[in-house]
Length: 291
Image 1: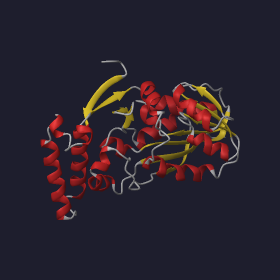
Image 2 (image 1 turned 30 degrees about the horizontal axis):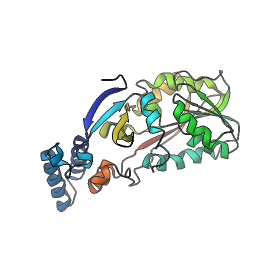
Image 3 (image 1 turned 135 degrees about the vertical axis):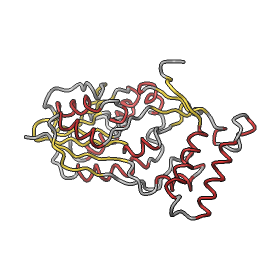
Image 4 (image 1 turned 90 degrees about the vertical axis):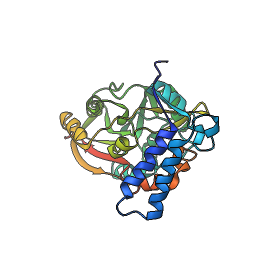
């Protein structure tokens, strides 16, 4: 197995997990017909044959889902990243933009900028933006969208910026890929001037603990993921404290009902929406570097 592939599982296991979570969360107060349907679907998926004969029972015939490292994963993901709607981004952006709208223009860092969606938001608000990402493929997309920004190849744990060189740093939905938060948070604190702000968003630990990974289509036919790590609020508070940052606010936007189009959850939409109903799916931290 290539170093880029470190683990794999099947779509069937994901379907069974979502059905089970929906059943667990609604077992006490759920409608009896809804509960019976969950049990029936669990039986059907558990018994589905993973050969060609079972293709009608499972999306993609119960295809394997492979793990990619960050470099290979985002190189592949960059081709489709901007084309599909995402519940995570839809609930995250209003919370982030509400913070950005209250800040004066300055020099801003978009750390782990990806295809540059926050770079565009910062530029629109008058900031001079530096975008950093470890993926050249993602940066190429970002340059197409915002050619006036300064894009650099780099990692969260070793940002290619001088100390105290920006007024604001934004890091969106990327810390989850770090096994340890501390180095990434420390780097954001290092490059932001005293009195500056740091806005960090992440996949909510509830979602990662329950669901695990975000899947995407690789090479138009294979499902893949880049590993997410659970970072509890206490871990964030500890990392902020170590870096000398002061927390101003924390927001936890809830699931908005959007399922990834064409994905396995749409195959079991009723169960998937019931599984995530009322749960926060993103966490948004607003912190400052004390003056």
